[in-house]
Image (cartoon, rainbow, N blue to C red; front, side, top):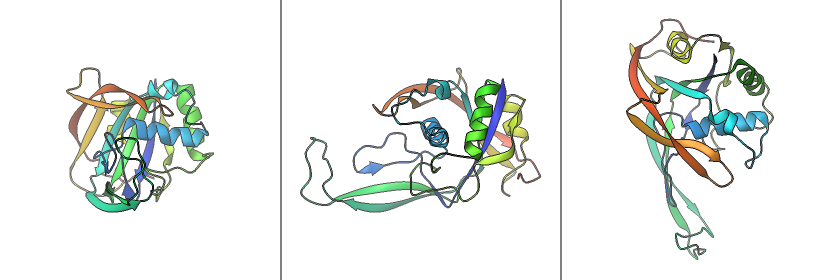
Length: 212
């Protein structure tokens, strides 16, 4: 097994996990469905394509900067209601997002798959964005030394800090024995079907040096 590390940094990010109708939420860190969606864009995969190879990768997130949870309002015309009808009036929705957050995302799996993803993220076929199409990354997602031979735990802990911050950083690791459940593993983006994974959360020391 190998590990691929990616940088998620932008003025705004949003990682919806349970959004319904006029309430569009965000998790406090990238969701697995959002990360896989970004990888699909890099590869040029259609929404109806099989994503089982990407979903099988083990994911971890290191929170280099938590960011600030913000909310704004948006209006839309001709929106569908919960009854499946088109509203005659403008619909107001709440949109939540993270401002100034920075994440190091790690994916563990077979080297051949990760090598193809590393190349795709370096030269993406479609525009990459962090949760919503209006939120492109401010720095490249690809890291020049992001493809590593070590385990997910070792590599994500040791990689130099992306920004300055607190002495401890939050770490979220996919773990079959983890105490938290996340329903964010995509089975099919076109049909919007998902399954559940387990994660564990812990704190890790911040490396002293900054990354590339």
